[in-house]
Structures are given as structure tokens and as C-alpha cells.
Image 1 (spheres, one colour):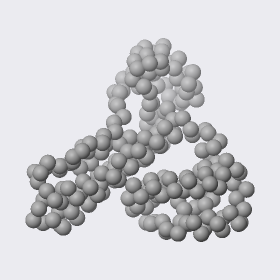
Image 2: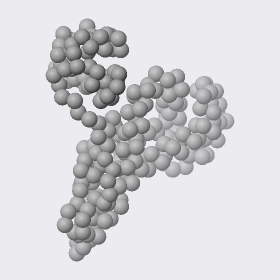
Image 3: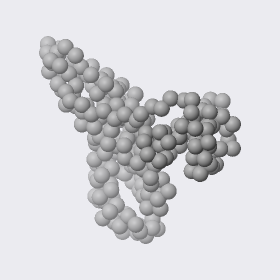
Length: 233
């Protein structure tokens, strides 16, 4: 997979995701000829856009994708982990820094509650945060697989359209997972649970049906089932 981030001058910084071993992989792309053939075969549309594609590919460092789940996060009252040290995630939700800031906020609140027992504060901080950072890791990996393998799937496109339609019809009760993660202060674990609940509802309605088949009666029944409002910013 190749994805691109826009720069302020209008150009793009591109990243290429490949396995380390196998064919194709970083191990198999060691010569100019191999790299050129690889891009012309799989990503031909990018080749005319840059004159330095092959040189950039061979020169730039290879950085592994890392996901960390560890336990415990603290040792007695002496040390505690925050951020990527205890829950590095794939970057495909762009939430790594935000999750670290949330760690700081929750840890500060726990230290305020347990002024006389720092170990208790560390324990509560770990309990409150780990389930959410585990959920973020799961969502980040799933989003990577979706971008890599399913982005052209008609079923996925239908699901996205249904999400958008239902979010407009029930703005207080329905929200796509990506919007819950990026546009609200909802904890990650709660966002994941709500998304799974919405998945079950869509499966019950027959998600493969065209959006036009969602009748007024069906939507009325759906309104009755959605009772918990969405926490929007």
C-alpha cells in the first residue's frame, strides 16, 4: 500500500508499506531495476509524478510498524509508563499522540485522588487506560487492513454510505466509528463497543440491501433501538 500526506508547498510525502521478506518485499527490492519494475507493475500512476522515485525508495530508511500491549504499566510507587512506552499503535487512526495526552490527563486526575498513595494512583490509572488503549490498538490494526485490502470492496462502500445516511437521520444516536474516534471525546473502548453494536443492527437489517431499501418503517424501528446519545464535541 502507498499513502500520501500533503505538505504545505502542495507536494506530497509518500510512504510505501511492504512486508520485510517475501516477493514483493523490501528484501526483494534492492536494485534500481527491481524497484522500477515493481512500481510500474503495481503503482504505475505514481511513476510519472516524480523523477526521484527509485532513488528515494532505495535511500530512505525502512521503519517497522509497531504495536505494543504490555502489563503492568507501573512498578510500586516508583515508575509509571505513559504513551508509546506502553501502548504504541499503528498510525492509521492518527491517535497516538492524542492517546498519550489522555494518559497524562487521567494520570493527573488519579494522582489528585490518591495524594497519599502514589501506587494506588498508578494502579487506577492503568485500570482506566489499558482497556481503551487496547481498543485503540485493535481499531488501528483493523483500519490498516481495511485500507490495504478492502477499500475497493462494494460491501464496504455500502456500509460507509449506510453509516452516513443513518448518522444524518439519527445524529444523536448513530455515528461512524472513525467519527467517534476523531470527532468526540468518547473513550476508545466505548467507541469500539458502539461500533460493534451498530454492526449488529446493520446485520439484522440486512446490510447487503441497497440503502434505498431502508423504508420509513424500518428506520422508525431503528430509532426505537437507539437510545444512548452520542457524545459529540
